[in-house]
Image (cartoon, rainbow, N blue to C red; front, side, top):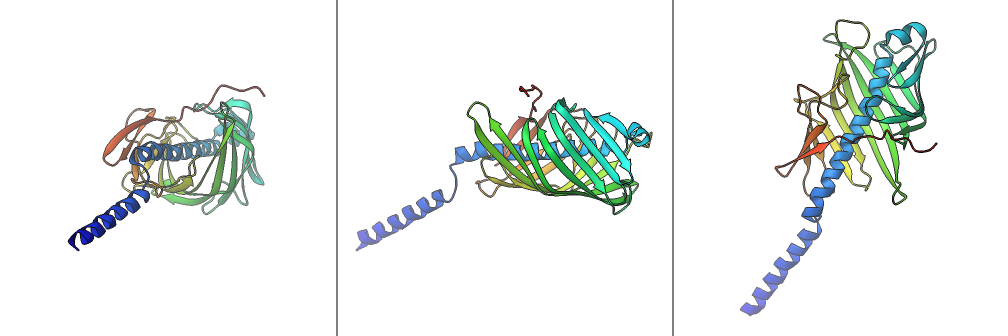
Length: 289
């Protein structure tokens, strides 16, 4: 009888261990894939920031506001005040100055103007490519919340950004999606009413999405360490983001902790282990048209 009870207990413990192991991914795989998913968030944040940089530069560009046309970040840009419309057009294989290639058009329109408090700016993307990946966007809008302590606050909302990339070696298609609910506070260089390289944005809020392998993430910027997107730097240079990874054993924390200088690296902390990554290098080599 005792042996029977011991056998039952051992069987029960073994069964529980099997169930527990099946409920989690393999740890070594978890590390590799979790880092890739975290890096996919960083690429999403970076692309969103750079697209917005061009818009914010445009609405404070002296030549564009005076002449109605200008060239910013490699784009041919036109502006009208009545109706309020901004067209940002990239010819074939245009280097945007940030190490990425853009092709196509995105337009910003508003019923009133781009500078009024509570004004809503809506974006539309037409045949747009980023590093030759097809980009489809729905529900992209900015709400101008007006001045807070002499700095403009903008709420950024995007229902969905879909990015499709094709691996030329395998001809396999990868799909990535994400949505944005963030606030950008613009800190303006007081030396000029127009944009300068000293302007920067403090970013708060959240991005949620799925990486190219279908794994989900939810990236929440830490309130006490907001992201800093500076016009003088190609990459995020400050801030901390906690990233929830429901498909993996561990969550991650991403740090962009360089208050001075402009560095092409960021760090990922997972299970008290530090990993250092370089930002996505972009694509500037043009394929045949």
